[in-house]
Length: 128
Image (cartoon, rainbow, N blue to C red):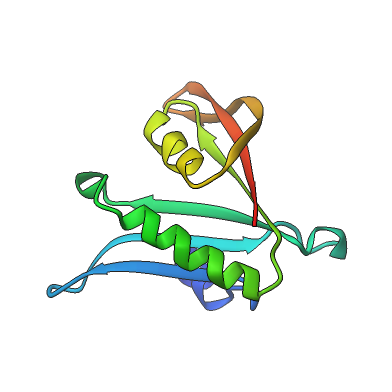
């Protein structure tokens, strides 16, 4: 139910972009951009981004098209900078973001814990 509530209560400045394969209307990827923080206006220019592309459909331009569409709407909604994290054990995702103009700005040590194993996250950003 948490996912349903998340979508229903999605913020006005938030952006959803969904990649759909025709003709079967299968979702093959999506991107979500939300305000970085809501407790102060100081971060209104910053969005935080999440991206998903079906692993079997990588390197087919899906992410590139999602980024282009998200960046366009983000500018219209007043975002100037996009910030996100990429797990250090996902070099393909990091390369995808870097190809879109993101730069590495830091590393969060032992940020994720999956099946008892700690994983660093790489902090990246892009100015629009």
